[in-house]
Length: 203
Image (cartoon, rainbow, N blue to C red; front, side, top):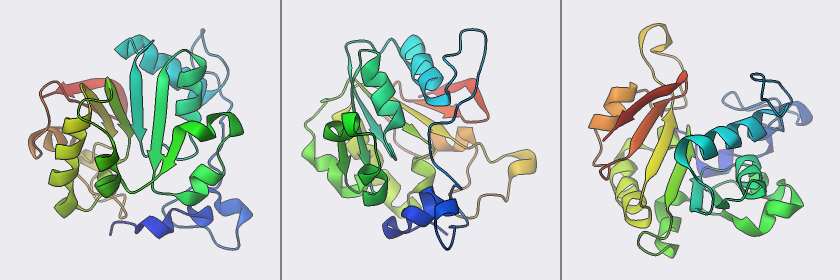
């Protein structure tokens, strides 16, 4: 059961502050302060942004994050010298972003909103657990559009294998290999398992 766009609201992102919390969402979608490794900056999103920059050499490149939520990653990438932008279907999430990143975030359903971008406009297109939130019937056209507007793509997905199979009722359940094989990705597209970010499959 895939969520409707209007379900990505306050109850989804910040359930603890609402009368009801969406079963698929978060208690609080915020900047999570945690240390990861000896070179950690003490915050999840900053460390995550640094990892993307180091892995993909993103400095001075134009990047689009699809499914950017409140834009934490976009902001931190920009703070580190990346020309980053974000797109998300949730008006609530974009309305609750940090003011500094607001000009670089757009509300829109990726299934139709990517038409606003020109061919190969972005050096890199990234998404974090986004494609599994799209109805399967809509994925071929969406992938075609992502291929069109980007030079390189990397998508982080849940890898529904083994003990995890059958979980996540609100999301498409595929293995990392199935995500790579079942869609017509542009050459070079990378599919990364959320469970192991060092596990990368390349088209």
